[in-house]
Length: 211
Image 1 (cartoon, rainbow, N blue to C red):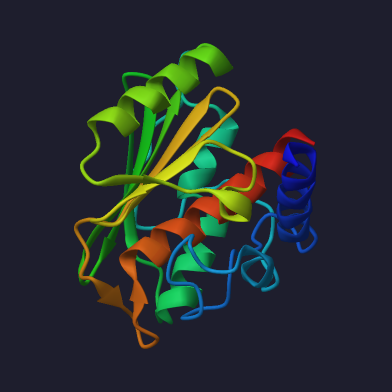
Image 2: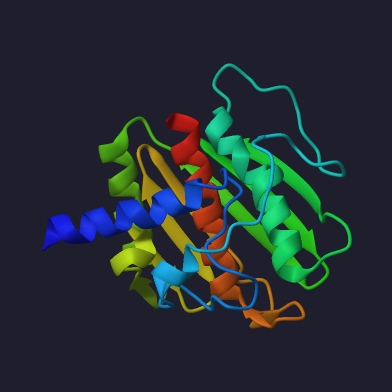
């Protein structure tokens, strides 16, 4: 049974990759969170180029020797930006600011409704990352595991206030939409749905980046 579930999760993630790493977890307004049907969620796939660049309007500095990896910097790159503007139907890209501290790369997207924060903790190895993830989940308020196809085969949880957290390899990814209203955009997507869709977009980029 576990093998069957793992295969289904692999197929769901593979379907995200078919259109490149800008593939999405669902069409705008259709996915309200990871509890939705993951098979249909993986079907939509807006186009986009594979890039990890920083968008205009943000601040950046030369990468130090111990700075973030190229994979970590993707959270402030073209794919999540394109997905965000598509979901919320934005006319212009929001301003971003990124930072690197305590082995964590953070990108803050400044939306009219508030700040959307995406961060990646880079641990020494997968076991350390999983310990960090477990500690975060234990401390998080109203944390609920993301299970079934929706977690794409990775340890994951969401919080009631709009955060999604995934652990993959030596990374712990957190998309924090808690500063945003309960629903956003013309399709009234929930902040949990937004956090989940951006998480799976980034995960698809990572899988493609390491393939």
